[in-house]
Image (cartoon, rainbow, N blue to C red; front, side):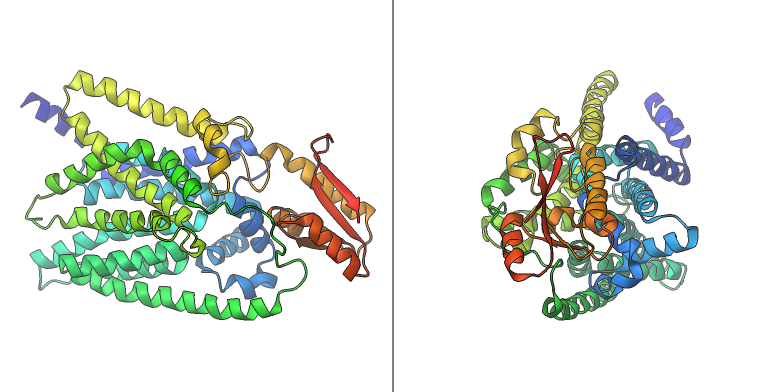
Length: 494
């Protein structure tokens, strides 16, 4: 009785709103750390090669933007236009805020889907956002984070709407929730291809298994939104593919193919390996503990189990189709890691509940101290000095996931040298010059290369430069990494 009263007292210290605010703030603080360390340069490959360049030239690039699931970038443009913030400030600021939203959505998952009290829901949210798969997602897959946050909020609504209609079938008290569910489902499906596909499959399967009218209705909106953006993107790709010209199409790739079973297996284990066992415990206990309040079908658990299984299938697709890069198993591995993290932290919470209070405190502090130490190290360590685990596997996984977050398309410490090199190009080459380099640097060139200069990129820059030298009547320069030069980059006339 005493322990029950103590638990009730602790529960009473938190309200859902306060818990969400704490979770949101914690997420924002954690996400801000790598940006503060990297300042004044941003972290994230897509940040430098996509988000900042297209936001800087939104009107000119709209033709291509609208065919690439444009909702998130359009939202960024609206924020930038209304606040007067620059492209980098908008992209980085939005990344911090949406990571806070993801943390808040995880808190809601704990409260609404897992039946946890506010303190344990905070532990769930905190434990999940500390995982490497989640941090890797927020590194540059900002649309994915936004879509995931909206997806989890959407999942929390479905059982609530179904239960409301079951208890009060003649009332329309849940109508506003149904409208919100439809809006969220359309946003998720229209924000990102992979998460949108996961959203559609989850809603369809849940509606069929749990006989959920809310999920069935939401699936209609999600599928319609997803198909619309996929078709728009395919049509635009056909037009752009016919119009590709110098500087926009990589050619002559001579790089070894990194998409192979060995690399994908190591990526899977390095990101998710430590969480598999506690995730299995969480998966098992979730179905048992959620058969409450007449929830005999375990509907709330099903909301999370379906995306876990679907993302698992995607992340292991390389076992059957080892060379099918179009299946993007590496992206599914990272997405699977997010759901594995939810089940793993839930499993840890349930195991700790079965221990004596003193033992649970010691074990819990040890586990979460490890999570905090590894996550902060992943955020702040220099790219050439990562954690031993990622240093050991970087040869296999670096193509898919950074070994630390202190990287965009090049090491953060080399950003100033890259910009200085581009300024040198602007001041020492003819305005009709063609600058040749790898695809990774095109974002820097879009932002800082001035005049009528063109950046042509290829996985084999020297081969492309030699080809252009003979076919163009324009000066051609090759930019490359120079390990013997303190400026880090060399420029040579071809």
